[in-house]
Image (cartoon, rainbow, N blue to C red):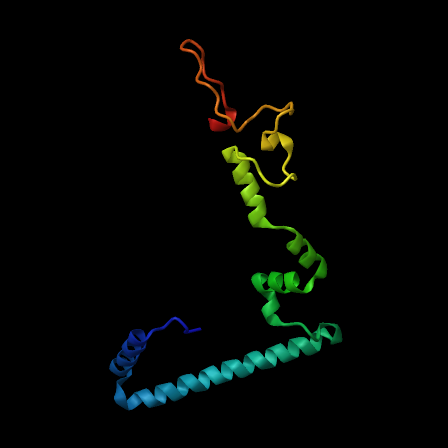
Length: 148
């Protein structure tokens, strides 16, 4: 919880606590705070135990940390064998390189890129990667609905 507090911040908090509570009352305040934290932890542990016992034996491996969506997704991705297989078959870096090659008009070393995207000769699709020549003086430029 307090992993990002540095030494200077800690010294500032101690000096502030001494100024606010005074050196005489500070040990009593620290004891009260630690007792309060201990009681909250006991209450939390008891509540977790009660919930697990009420849910029944099918939820015995239930962890409250799984209620965090990030932790739940991470756990499901690591445990599910089908998802592991899909993750291992998909190479994002390779896919991104192929798209970048197609955009820059370079030939990709992989034949899995469609011919129309790759710009191979003999395709009927227009070559979208090449720049078009400028229109004549009196000719209007083409209308692009996505650009407006």
